[in-house]
Structure formats: structure tokens, C-alpha cells
Image (cartoon, rainbow, N blue to C red; front, side, top):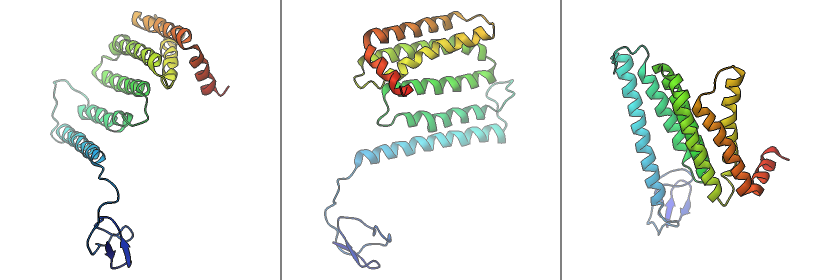
Length: 222
């Protein structure tokens, strides 16, 4: 058993430093009390490596853009490194945090899609293709998300996917209402998204009626 010369306490196990004062322990160590967490250490190492790569890319991009005024394409009138910074920070502090224990597949999928759509919309604005992204790309991605959430809600036994399935109704209805208020024609793909959102809601009632009612009661505190 090891001993701390400053705290005058004996410390079991194979610690190298005193848990009280962090001084170096003296004496022979014993067998460790707890098994070595090799999986957690590997996960921590992987996280540190990807974090180092992300921040290296950010620093390099900012340096090439602001210090050397390098433009990857002619005609760029904005600082392209800020777009890269936005994407990498969204990846580091948004997307990477989604893959935690306790997060359901539907939650990961839905939040991931919304983060990517937000980043795509901001990027498209600077490149002058925002209208194309909003009319074509965004509804296609949301249609795929609604279908995936419906499948997950059907096979999920815990009911955690139901709230994301029910939110599909808002995904389809809100854009249509917004365009109607602005007296603009609704694009074809957004009409498809509207119809699909209603279809998956009806499907949820047919196949998971009790879960739908229970989820509505729980979320609305009824």
C-alpha cells in the first residue's frame, strides 16, 4: 500500500498521486481497484484527434483567407473561411454532440437534418443559390426525413420516435401556410412534403393510435 508523506494517509490501489494533495505517493502499489477503461480512453483519444483536426483546418482556412487573401475561385467577394468556420463549428459543437448515449435514432436524425439544412441555407445565400436550395434541395431532404421518422416510429418499441413523427406535420404545413400568407405559389416539392406529412400522420394514427394520443397528452400536459 502506498503512503502520502504530506497527508499521512495510506492509499490503496496503484495510484501514482495522492487523491487529496496530488503529491507523489511512496511505497509499493497494489492491484488496481477498478478495471482499466480502455474503451473510454480510446473514445477520448478519437475525440481529441478529430477536435485537433477541426481546429487545425479552421486556423489554416482563416490564415489563408485573411493573411494571404487567397481566393479558391475568382470573383469571391466574401471571406470563404467564415463559411468553413461555420461548418466546422457546427460539426464540432452540434453534430458530434448528437451521438451520445441516450439519444434516440429519430432525435439524432431530425436534429442532424435541421443543422445541415441551416448550414446549407446560409452557405447558399452567400453563393447566390438560396432560392434553388429552398425550392428543391430542402423539401427533398425533409421528405426523406419524414419517411425515415415514420419507419423508425413503427419499429421503435420505446415510443421515443413518436414525437419526431408528429413534428412531421409541422414540417409540411408551416411552409405551405407561410407561402399562402405571402400570396406566393407553393413549389411542387413543398406540396409533396405537405401531402406526405398528412399521410404519415394518418398512418401513425392507424398503426400507433394509442401511442399518438399518449404522446400528445404528455407533450401538451393534458
